Length: 305
Length: 248
Image (cartoon, rainbow over all chains, first blue to last red; front, side, top):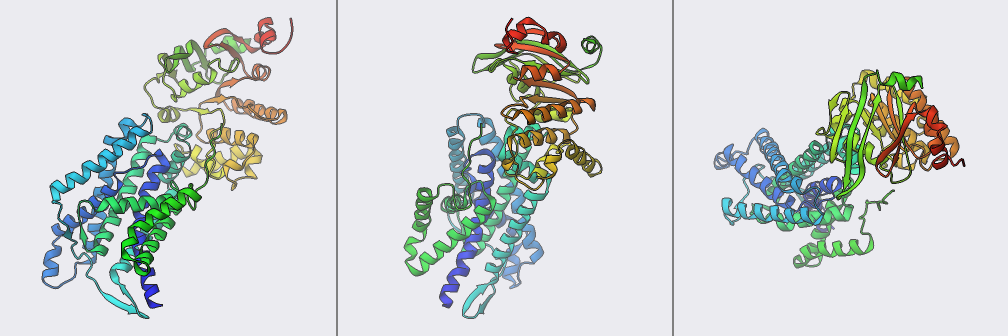
């Protein structure tokens, strides 16, 4: 029984990371009906931003002298990487998507794949393809609860993910920018008629989604111990599946989808075979597309005349 | 007729001159010119496909003017994007109402005040809209998409009023509504005009449009073929035959 709970804990923490990334896919899709394939690379570069920020703040010195990195500095790393990634997301939007926004829908899909490949290869060039050990922004502390091993890192993943998700929810529901985002996603022309600057709203969406992906990147680095320039490919794809599972365009759906994918992956690895952990995600994708293509929380949109 | 005479001397909120609108090379509007003076109600009437909606969309900037100019409140507006035309004081209530279906009536109304969100006057505007359309007050927490067609039209007009427009562009407010509701909507249009808001009304229901507006222009395949004060147009034999269903 304790093994089961262990898998649940691990699955939920992995799932929280998928959820953070899935939010960016779903927000951009909700507003532009675009699958931002470069989002996995924003996640990867977010992890690298955290890596370099932590180095710049002297994380090695702390670990060499056996001290743990101060929590305040860890927060600086997190927020700094989120800000850098927000900037990256806005830049991708301006260079790869805005010029082709009124083109047929296949065009931005292709520029998205182009942006993704460019960023992957730029990262290989700049950072070398070798995996890097993630700096101990949080030093691991283990404790057992009824036979289940919990680490402070897993707890931090939950806490950061939950705080960011609640923050996002409040932002989207309560602020004028959040309302503008919802209005643009429901009806772009009607939003313009309200005086909403659609371009600025799209920029805000990319900034927020990218910042969340960066947080996911840092948490992933802490959880998985190493990062590499291609880490965004598979993880990004799984997070995308999570967004589809929950109902793409639906914010709570992305969270539910992320957690379910994380759990499914962990339980499959634990009880079936670790070889199937990636396959299960895509099996879920096939099943959901056949049985409920609008996703668990998605609604079938009827085009009104 | 006296309205028409004085209209020329008033400052124009909207001046459209030589407007042409193209859709993929096909002209929907072919050189339309007219003005709407401050405080006036002007109607554009004409059959389906005459280009009325395209004129409104070009006035608010949802489609570009291929030729000609749109001047709003004395400023040339061709290069101004839609959201900034709204900021200048022009608002379109589009055909089909374009309600934010997933948001409550309250949220729809609040979004109408996106540019005028100061809390001090927001409440008063909210009350004013609910006085004009009491039905909306009973539905505040209901999703916009669940309202009836008439209620959605009220919501669309109320939402536009939340932004305190100086010029209100109404596209087919009677479309698909029962006669009783149509009368109610048009009565509120007259009420709105009494508060000093300028109105450009596009309407297929010619009789109603000519009873509501001061002046009207008749559009046929993208051109204005007839203009004048509504009282004159109502007795014009060509209008009677073509739009009011009266035989000569």
